[in-house]
Length: 288
Image (cartoon, rainbow, N blue to C red; front, side, top):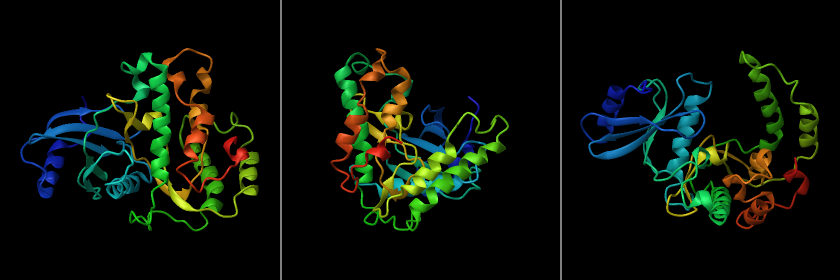
């Protein structure tokens, strides 16, 4: 394996944090997530997982790491399934980027394959889908003020900023050599105009996950329940329900693939609307 992390520098930093002694051993790159580096290793008899940005940093990569670590620290003691934070290093000079260490999770990522008995049981997979909804609902139900996250995001004019932000992100893809423009995405401006014209007049700030899908969660081996949610770009925002799960599986609808027993759009809305009290019935929003 090409080592993505300077293990000697990491060990030296861990010495300053009182995190074991001796060399770092059994370092292995983990699959999971879609962009950042996850490295599991042992030191002084204890297992760790390091998370850091990819080798080619984006403009906000380091700040994202710092925010993720802050969120994990804030979630300690809550009912949100998450990896326990061990320590964080906001200093970019130690490993060339901000990073943090967390507890390993005994679980699996469903996008890389389903173990038994889940692979052969539609009922268990359905429960996994409900657990996926339970996880994001638990996150959304947290009081960000009580968690000490009052400065985590800019609440003022949050909704007003979103369409412009999304358009700017889309336009920024022109900097990528492989990007050939928006010709294959019709109606972008029309959708943006509709969202601006139908923006809710009021909202209640809360916590949402920036990229919640199957690749960013882990399930338990012993039950159809979430083991952990990967923290990726959380923000303070209006809590919107969505049809993400249905969209994710739309391309394989009608097949007998194991994944098809996951809970669908109607089930997500029905379950999610219970614990999240500030989500109002908005059919059009759920169908955008």
